Length: 148
Image (cartoon, rainbow, N blue to C red; front, side):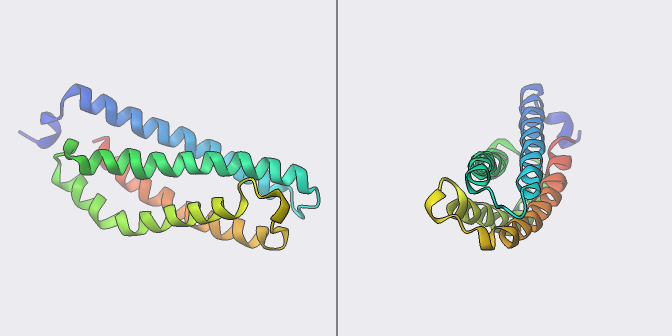
């Protein structure tokens, strides 16, 4: 009997819930990311900061869900399928780098109206976008296995 058949209905439902929640937050993050990028050349400081604060908060929630939700769930012993655990272990270092990039961006731009680095925001957004694209690729690989 395959490992998939051994997975309880409750565990499968929880996996589906985690993946669905992650994908929904991801959509919201990308939507706000695009809205922030559309503000270029970032001349309205208060509008830029207000949107950056919302974006940063959602970004941290999203990163936390992936990092502490999905990965924590897998490594806490709830996941027994070797294929899933093997992929999770293999991608964790790269995934962690994307989490560090999110935290760094948040540290630089969340509620820092007095020292908003407008001159580096465009570059930082671009770099963050690359990290988020990498993260999405890693999440999709992992989530496709989790849902099997």
